[in-house]
Length: 323
Ligand code: 8YV
Image (cartoon, rainbow, N blue to C red; front, side, top):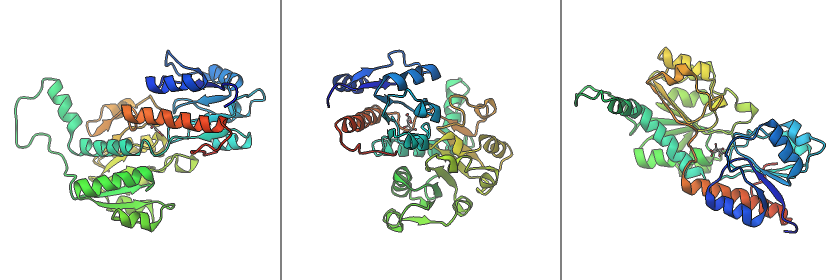
């Protein structure tokens, strides 16, 4: 690496990651952890060689196409990169990288957590105990739905979808169905998962539906009114992908009128806003985008983002280039 490149880091990262950033680069860290507003992002694009953003930063065509832009690489902290206009990055010769692999297991664990929580009504139970309302054990109290041996339908069978399949098959003896136009049958057979030709077929046969697709424009509202209605009555929807893959209004209607039994959501259409009607429902579990939120994974994500920057500034090819 020649002169130390200037890297703007938009949010606080684990201490070890910030230390490595400081050691390698002229790192502009965000000690306050307040999201950068549009003016601050524009200044960063102008004054730095690289940007290390997160899901809370929208890196749009105006930023990427600005005539005074100095940033040459956007090293996203996250596997999903729907916060970045990748087409505009390509058009303007800006390299974009992400952080795959390192968060696969933790995100799969969280999808399973949501499935168990919503099926077994653990959120309701916990609220009940904490509120001091528990008056004693009863045979009919808070009866949930069994997970073991049921059918799980995965929409998307990439790294995270496959990790969920493994847990569901090996841990809970579930039958696993999936729809994914980009996965080979060999991958599926090794995990004992069965392909279906359409999303509707998967949903129609599944007790639990879990979303593991990326979030480009094509998957916006993939779970629309019709697809939610294609789910079994009594089924549960789990989302750890991106909020806008689900039409939240359609989902709320289906939850209210009993079209489906419940939902476990880690992501929302307009984060951090969560509709009040949704928050008032007992048959949903709501988490604040925790998929990759373990100490181990957030450090690994930071290191992966740094590795991508280091490779770029060393004149090599960043391992996780997506644009
Ligand atoms: C992160 C994620 O919390 O990697 C992703 O795509 O959604 C999460 O792991 C978030 O993206 C951090 O920027």
